[in-house]
Image (cartoon, rainbow, N blue to C red; front, side):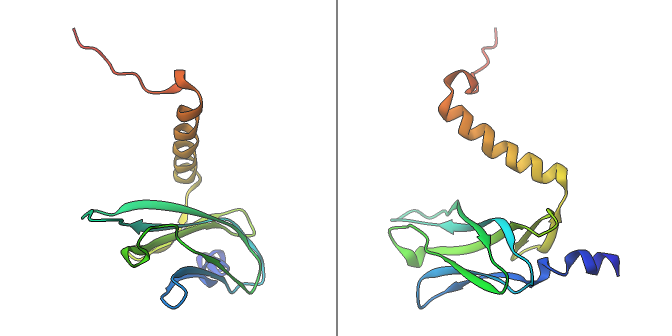
Amino acid sequence: MLEEKRRDQASLVTAWLDPDSRSIKIRNGSEAAIDNCFVFIDSRTGDKKEFDLVEYWVGAVPPKATNEVAPRTEQPRHWKLNGVQFQDSRGRLWTRDWMNGLQELTPTLADKKRWRRVRAWLAKVIPWLRPKPIELE
């Protein structure tokens, strides 16, 4: 019962591909806004055989609203929705993907993912933070 109550708002957030507009739609069917929303797509351009995971920032989605994201790719037919991540009105982070369904991200896991993004950005901006190769003698 308590677990169901924690999942109430998160279970009303969905994302899907809209083939007509060639976009991803994110629907917040709950009574409260969600924030820090990202969608993850697998994108392939040109003649590449493998997909690249691409993250798109959606931001806040108001209650009972649908936001739309149009993936920026050369060939829109070569992408697929991988998942959505968002923060509910109580500050809990959630992820939903096609393999695992809806899952609450523990603070440790969420912090690791966020720190990984921050570290990658800092390495681009501050040269001395880039990993250095280790020379073995």
